[in-house]
Length: 498
Ligand code: NAD
Image (cartoon, protein in one colour):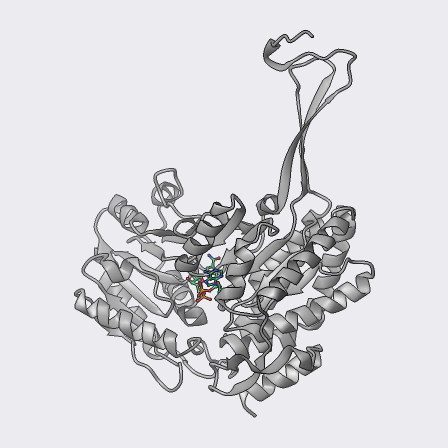
């Protein structure tokens, strides 16, 4: 059976209706074996308009539902995701090419955020503030915001929706999802699962969770519409720039999760066994297609040769192949364009003085062997995010120079240091250390937990999703003052008698 046949069976089992497919729709080709499935029906601008009208109606009703009751819907969603975990994870593997355990991990991430959001539904805390006026009190509350458009990337085809949707739902907001045009099948499947949660919940308003399949045009229509209270967009920096400009033009609100260019600093005191394992997972996991993938290895010059030799040996035996097969650690790139990007970046790296230490070749279809490239300097290709498994290695002598090198790229998502020195570790985490949204010690840059706020600085977009207080982006802050006295004093002692 081809991967497309497998996907068809799973979609039927999960209850995705035949009406989701139509000739002339979005072509679906599995990166696993290149097999083609039925094209997916695409939506157009009139569908966007209808979805936004429905979302406005849903918002009017959903914001009146008590938050803990909204949390009950998310709890049910978590239950349905648990029941569908194996099927959904396999679909992630078939459509996005993730190895089995990463597919399962992605669905687990959805379940985890549902659990988190269910608890959060009873903790949308505000503040009480002392008023300067007698007989007054002030407080700050968090109110539902309005429809949230979630635009997602291919590489986390389902988790990104869950990070947003679980929080948005408990915060009182309807969600319209525009998944990547490269991964519409997993989105259809998730929506079929969500339909079951909605049916069990019973009285959720129509239009609370909607799915619009399509390409950039559908995304652009959503982004431009003032009825969208929050655009949460995950993808390339190029996309984020376009989205930010349009949303700013209508003075709207956006939450951007864009490209990364993540580094690891390895110092002479580092535990090299741990470093090698962390580098391998972070640099080649998901075939280098994570926003948090390790792309730059910054090694002290005294330990560089030994570390590179160990990595080269580990890379040369990496099991690359069918992501469904037990033992495979590296699946395919998403498509032919991604392979071309991989090859072009390697050619540019060599032109900029780099030496390919290991890997860098292509196999059948969109399978490639992850590459390690020694670079003489942080040149243009190193400063750019190529969404493929290429690890650039640079050396340094002084720790401050290493931190400067780590920060000297346009992106600011994830970063880490491997060291046994508390001074180096704390300096890395200090105000003059890493400038990224995520900074780790003795842990690689990828594989974040949902409990922390996730996101990055600079060209990564500045947004935060998932845990901590990221929920505040999905709500409207309101400062309230109540006068319970019989007088009307003005603030700052202003007098105004009429
Ligand atoms: P992409 O930018 O090509 O597409 C992402 C989504 O944006 C798709 O749904 C696409 O249709 C839509 N889109 C594209 N242009 C648009 C526009 N002008 N207006 C509205 N929507 C538009 O990204 P991709 O190739 O799917 O994903 C890879 C990129 O995503 C990498 O750069 C990666 O680092 C980034 N990413 C970031 C995070 C994060 O949390 N920071 C997470 C995952 C992926």
